[in-house]
Each structure stands twice: as C-alpha cells, then as structure tokens.
Length: 207
Image (cartoon, rainbow, N blue to C red):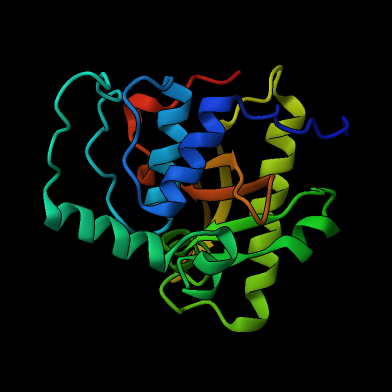
C-alpha cells in the first residue's frame, strides 16, 4: 500500500471559510470555489443552511449600511451555539471517530457528519452497536485508499465506501465526500459527509 498523502494545507481564504462556517457567519463572495466547498460542506455537516454571501466590505468613505437586526440576531445565536469542532461534536452534529482513524493509519482528527452516521453507520438503527465500529473502519479505509491513489490532495475530495444495508445482504457503494478544515481549537481536521450534503457544482474532479 502506498503511504497516505496528507491533504495540502489550507489556503488563507479556505481557513477563513472554515472559521466563518463554524461561527455561523456569511461566506465572502471574493473567496475561491474551494473555499466555497469547505464552507458549504461544514454548514451541511452541522445541519444548518449556508447563509447568503457577504458582499465585499464597503468603502469607509461611503455611508454605513444598516443591517437587518433580525439577521444579525440570527447570526449571533448561531455563532454562540456552534463555534468549534468540539462544540459541534458535543451538540451531536458531528461524531468523532479519531481513535479508529488512528488505528487505520490516518493521523489527523476525523469526524463523521450526523446524516452519514445515521445512513451509513447505523443504517437507521438497524445495525447493532457492536458492528458499527467495523463500518466506520470500512469508511476510513476507503478514504485512506482514495488519498493514497490521488495525485494531489485538495481540501475536498469525493470517494466511495462499500457497505451493506439490511435487509439487502449485498454491499452497495455509498458516495462520500471529505473536507479538510480547522478552527481555533483544532487547526487541522477532516470531516466526512454524504456526497449529497455537498453542492454538486462545487465538487472538484479528483483523479
């Protein structure tokens, strides 16, 4: 097996996008498509919608625009509730699978989104608890193989895991997406989501 390639370090706007997503703040329209992918993916993993894009800051010489107080209050509430990966885990939006990830040779903190956990790991609670760790391991091994075979390691990459879904005994391919991001408490982490949690038009093509 080829050594696993760590995803590249995030660009400045990608880090900003990850931070804004966790804080519940709007995406800046000047940032890159890859930053958009990170922002939308994290918002999807947290189970909250992306906010309207934030226009570039106005010229200081122009009159200051008055923001909608209700929008400001909504953003403040979201920022207060989810600020970091750890808080997202405590709130149940993300499931931490870092110990299992380390056991399969992925050396960074890794989380699974709640929709992926419910569909892919528990299969709507039809999978016994003692079998769920093996399913997490299957997903993580699929990720490791995908990273090992990638020519580049972008901040977002699509891959597939082979899982069975009762009552059908035949394993099926589940389309997944992983995003590299970070926050003030966890500078570098990976979050795995269902592919349909990430807008199709922002998914890069990875070979």
